[in-house]
Image (cartoon, rainbow, N blue to C red; front, top):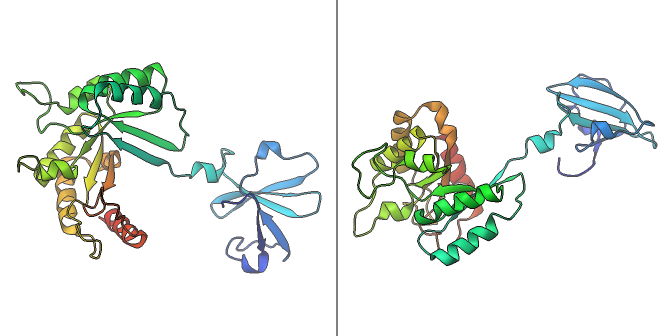
Length: 278
């Protein structure tokens, strides 16, 4: 419940308090009642109803108030609140002085506990970002913009492997970005390479931001799930099932990125539900 106190009529609430005898009168359901702050002049009891425990007490006006609680006395609304994830991909835009100034400011911000902030600067600025995160005790997570197709240590001139990023203290990596798939000089990344990068990252204990939707080119059409289904199948063949939780799906339809033409809410919901079902 999002309001401090929501008023219900018991006649329409039989499903909520099923099989329990309560006088049919108005009562209140209060979702934010802190149990340790109940005043002494309230009388209350605790009963186990369905899968929730409900605290009932009577206030000065003789209104019955019910508060949903769990066994640890923590607020269910707060406990189940889903975190927001903010990902900043700086690509290859900022020079050193600009990047360092921005990193200095960002790492001094005290972000909410309900927000995960992930910053992905150019590879050359990752050590400075990591240093400032530690220095300012920042909640920001550093992120690489890509990983190599090879992993470990070896004769890999010019490559940046996933385990080296993890050794540096990097938490995340972007994989499968549309610009990587499109490629530069007509050398693009295919889905087999994307799946291999995901394997390398997960195997090196990096969390993955997996970009999908680059082939979604027309807002009037439904999302083409076939390519995503093929990619997900390849990934599932390479990594254990329990590691799937370490992959964040980032939806980036080509027609919406940088064009000012956002995806409609209905299309976005359909895409999200479709992705979750895969």
